[in-house]
Amino acid sequence: MIRAVAAGYRAGRARLLADASLHLRPGTLTAVLGRNGAGKTTLLRLLTGELAPDTGRVLLDGAPMAALPAVVLARRRAVLSQHHALSFGLAVADVVALGRLPHRGTAAAAEDRAALAALRLDFGLEALWGRAYPTLSGGERQRVQLARAAAQLWRRGGREGQALFLDEPAAALDLAQQGAALRFAFAMAGQGAAVLAVLHDPNHAARADQVVLLEAGRVLAAGPPNEVLTAARLGACLGVALRGAEGPDGRTVFLAA
Image (cartoon, one colour):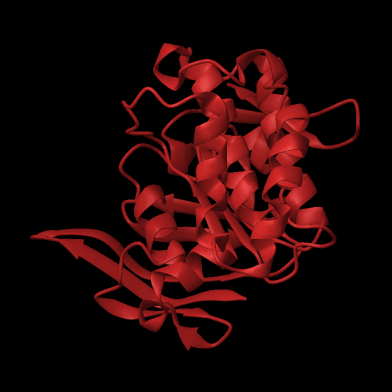
């Protein structure tokens, strides 16, 4: 669905990403790991079409993403960014409804009310629905932004042809809400969407279909978790000594060495 071919990006003299090749397939979740400044967010922004690569290509269904109108992209993919610059006193309901704006004037707009009603319950926002967004805690804001991204892609039936990008979706969330955010990401992939999540916990990434390790703007390794995630490779990528141990479900769990 979305493919990066030797994509790179430079900001001034700084090369933020170089020679990145990656394929986001429908119905799969790709996890991206790397330390701060490794190029994770730059890769995400290239794959969403927010940035255009200065080397290589990024394609959506074989077409250059940079050539597609913004509204077309907005109907196909939703993005949860790290930072949410929204200082207006909008109610939570209005923030979630922003996700439906790309569908205005289309047949999908008829589903707006049903989408908001469903997401209000799905994300546990009943008590926050009328609250002013700036009064929320960081974790509450993250939940609202997840619901806004879900609203952008909401439709009855499967998610084929859609993509969801999550930049640190578990940030500022308590353990229960972290689990809920990750379940949402996996559910979207299970319904047919191509999902990419920038994560910090290799144990979360181990449940993905594909893992990409970034180091200093380059892809260190990419592939299935059981092939990519080793203690030695994670140590090089994340800059911390880890050891692997067998968890209760038979999966390898990574712990501080």
